[in-house]
Length: 419
Image 1 (cartoon, rainbow, N blue to C red):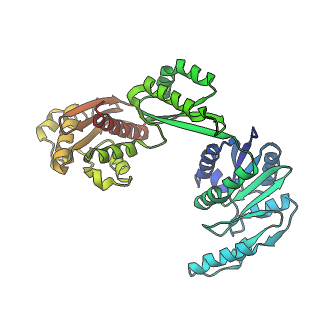
Image 2: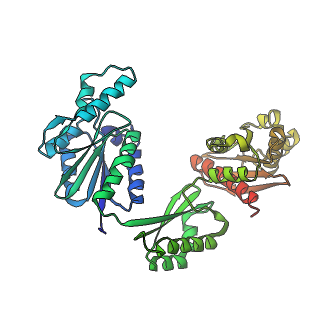
Image 3: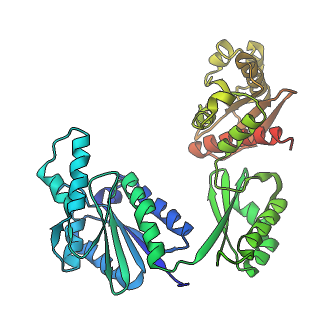
């Protein structure tokens, strides 16, 4: 088994540098190669400049086992990657018949004219192994120099992903003796990274001593814990030891753990509702429809989601949702009585088993009340009763909306599980 097999990721395109296009390719490739036991040495974005491309290729071929390049393989004049790679390897372009046939069929199947620039996409360096593109026209290229590999792919994400999954990663696995790697992901919600690290401080030393790496991957409202271990698939302890520590982590953290796989909280909640044959309706003020959007994006939403409303204004809370006018007159719109009334009214209107209501001041300012920005009330109406919870979040509007939505779904999750 070879060790220290490293990957360089080079993404080419001026649009990446100026922020016109978000570089999702690098993130996807990094995550994907890691699953195959490969470590990313570096990941960079560079401009459509021939000299810079050559310099970065030379650097990578000296230090990385495999260099993965995306971008610059299209038919337009600014797509210079193929010619630059050809020049770097002191090679010439030749026509690849299989690629030409695929490109021709691509345009014929869509009743589109095939232009000369499209024909030129079948030209590839003579020294390369052609990687077929089953989702587009530009082929990928695999070249070798001094035992190091350079692989160039289109920048279009679904074309790149197809090549990686269907051809490139299996071929890398054949050419290189890859180490086996096992990951175990633990998803937590509602607390920060520092709190979790404090809870796991003594256990983390034990985990490290066992040769297991523990990574903290935080995002607003969610902290993903990833246990990783390298070894042989034939080793009986390869997975059992890491799973043992995953169980110890859950016992230490308790209810904040919502899954042992990389899955969204809304997916877990949707699955729980389906398993228990229960329905949900939602009245969102400060969260602005985010919870509804999350739940309805999941397959099977029609089985569990009865409906929702976003009564942002006080008047709408009364006229459409049906919150009693006296409650709204006596209390601030952001208060426990209003949130509770919203949840009960929503449950009645949509005839659901559960109902969630959110109201709060998401920020960044608050001219309507003396209640601090970041104050959020979340009410949960269940088949038995209704409860309301107050959260004090920060001053970042986007973060507050997301975090409040996660808190709401987690309250529902814990209630269904009777925790």
